[in-house]
Length: 378
Ligand SMILES: C=C1C[C@]23C[C@H]1CC[C@H]2[C@]1(C)CCC[C@@](C)(C(=O)O)[C@H]1[C@@H]3C(=O)O
Ligand SMILES: O=C(O)CCC(=O)C(=O)O
Ligand SMILES: [Fe+2]
Image (cartoon, rainbow, N blue to C red):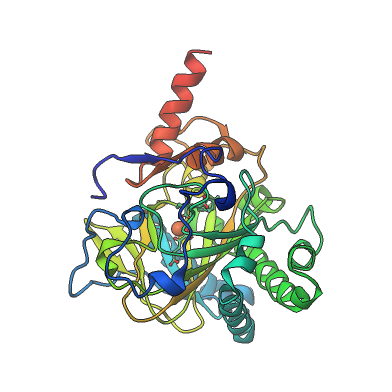
C-alpha cells in the first residue's frame, strides 16, 4: 500500500524496443482490451483499495478573478486558500483563471480524435527512448509490469527554445492535415505556461517570498505536456490508469473531464478530486516542495479507471531548465526549519525518477539520500 516503501525499477529502454523487432512486446490495443474480463498479467496491480463510497479530498476551489485583476483583498483571500491546501497535501482547483472554456473543449475533443486514429498511425509517432515527444500505449516502451491502463500523447513543450514546436511536430510526423490540431495544443499549452507563472506569483505571496522569485526560476523551463486517455476496463479494481506517484516537476496543471478518477492519498486514505466544470486541478510537485524547503507538500496521487466510460485528462507539467540548481529562498530556511534537501539540478532529479519509479510518495527523500551518499563516495 501507499505507506510501504516499494520501488519498481523501470526497464532500461534497450530491453524494450519496437514491437516489430521484439515479438514479446506488449501492445496496448484498447479496442480489444476494454472488453476483456481476463486482464493480461502485465496490467495487474495488487488489488487496489477501492472503497464503495470514496470520500472527497478537501481541496479548495480558488476563484482567481480578483487576483488576476490585481485586487488586493481577493489576492489575500486566494493566497490564504492555496497556503492551507499546500501545507496539507498540495492540491487545489482554480476557476476564473482567464482561459476560454472553448479552448478546453477543443483540447479535449481533438485528443479524442487523435486517440481514435488507427493503432498503426499512433505507433508511427511512438515516443522514442530518452525523449518526451510522442505516443505511448500503457508506457509499454519503458515498463514491463504494472502497466498503466492508458494511452498518452506527450510533448516536450518548450516555449523558449522552439517556436511553434507542437505545430511543427504534428505536421512533420503526421502531415499537413494535422496542422490545426497542432495549433490547438500550441495555444492550450501556451496558456498553461502563462497561467502557471501567475500561479507561482500567488504561491510566492502565500509564502511571504518576493513575488517574482519562483516565476524567474521557472520562466525559461523545459516543461512537459501530456494528453491522457483512459479506456474502460472490465475489472477496474485490478488495474490503475496512472499508478501512485508524486509529480517530480514544479507545478502540475490538470484538466480532467467530468468522469472522475483522480485520487489523492491524504490523511491515510485515497480521496477523490471531484471534477468541477471548467476548473483546473493544480498540484505541487517534488521540485516545488524542494524549493519551499519542504513547507509546501507534494502528495501521492493516482488515476483509477471504470468499467463503462473512457476518461480523459490533459496535463501541463511545469519544469525548470535542466541545469537550474534547486535551492530554497533564504526566507524559507531558518533554525527551526533548516535545509531539508541538498542542492541538485532538475535534470538530476528527472533522470532519477525516470530510472526508479517509486509508488510510496518518498521520491524526494530517497533521491536526496542517494545524492548525498553518491557525492560522499566521489
Ligand atoms: C517529467 C515527467 C515524468 C512523468 C511525466 C512528467 C511528470 C510526471 C511523471 C509521471 C507522470 C509520474 C508517474 C509515472 C509516469 C511514468 C506516468 O505514469 O506517466 C511519469 C511520467 C513519465 O515518465 O512519463
Ligand atoms: O489523469 C489524471 O487524473 C492524473 C494524471 C497524473 O497524475 C499525471 O499524469 O501525472
Ligand atoms: Fe501526476
